[in-house]
Image 1 (cartoon, helix red, strand yellow):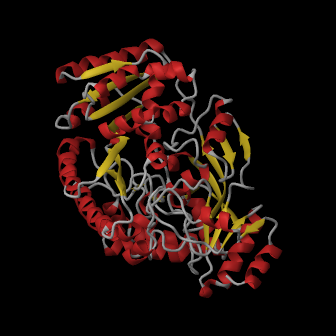
Image 2 (cartoon, rainbow, N blue to C red):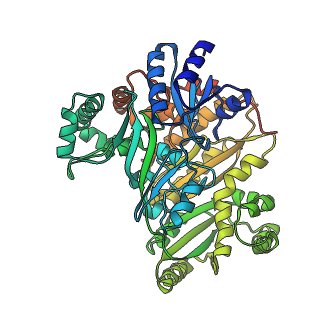
Image 3 (cartoon, rainbow, N blue to C red):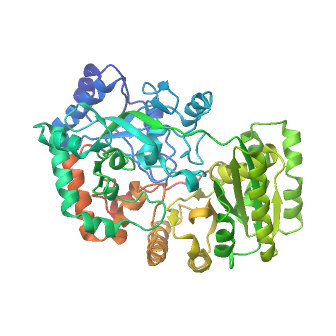
Length: 550
């Protein structure tokens, strides 16, 4: 971007503009495999700034000017990467505006850790937080429609959206919330840009209702494409744009404020840890445990287990209770397993919660008793500290890999697949066969209760066939997932890494509907272009990182 245009931006906003090498370099990467260098990073101060930037981008759209929002930079798909203007929300859009008895209003640049600290003072919680809870923002959670360890019971982020404020293509900030049919008709009657959006979208959704419902994945979680099937509910006669904005990765507008519904967390909890020597009976084990209604049901594999123990000092730093010595003492049984070569193939963590401690203990012990038929090693945790060590292994596995791998790189490209839990025992051996063909070391962790797995290969990105392996392996794994009627992304969304594969999942007709929706909201293609629609494999290949971690 030439100096004249940057000067124009600087003069028309209250926020800040940065073009220094350090800021540009930071904004060119996230937690994905990609690097895309922007021309400038802008820190908007208010909704008026964003409106001015939207109008500026529209005026210069023909020259390729566009806007991509960034906050925590924890995205694993390349979602916040763009070669034009990056809008960083963490500097100024970082205020918690209110926390009431059941809801909270917050700006998108607030880190989830700070948001949770504020809501817990009121004994309230947003339960859809991801494993990156310590470093992600609530805006990113909305953009990806994130989920996490509590999603099994409570659902994903979209479920907790009471309302949103967003700047749309007209450069104005709008409040979006569920509408009754009467309210929808009033909005559609308005001769305004928002009225046009409501009219066009309602027409598309009603005309293609049956086709969209058939396209909706049957698994419990999905962040692939646009959630068009969740906007218009003919039975309830409600129309809810928040369900479309959530998970859209900033491609339809720029969120400026979020009001979340919150829950009251359970007062008591206990964990049942299950050690599996193999996956042949995994589906049966999962089904057995689920009947006792755990709040969370997580897993990690033997590679994750070994990595956690290898880098135990770093893992201990992430744990918030006790001295390092006392925490290290907690890991002696696991260290003994590793030394004896008895590391389990999978470790499952089922956490049971409730407000009656006796009832929680009854369900936990009943689940353990039911597993006796499988002749598995199990353990009931006796304290929060003991449970925390297992949570730390699960939550911190990706970060441990990122920070300690040398001469390779964590390669998240098949990192968020989901099938049905009853398919696990058939699916996982076939997945292992595919992975074994490439002789790649990889970790598997995830949400075993809803059969959502995060597969993270360790790869030498400097090898000449790196891009070829990504292409071949993605095709084969996604073919397998879709043969089981699953989704290629349950939580992590599309970004650069999966947008080229959406047609494989949905077919040409649905992709055309996605493109029409993008055009309805973003006629000039200025909102995070190339995500969800309009990106092919060549772009993906051309922006792969080509350096290993040192």
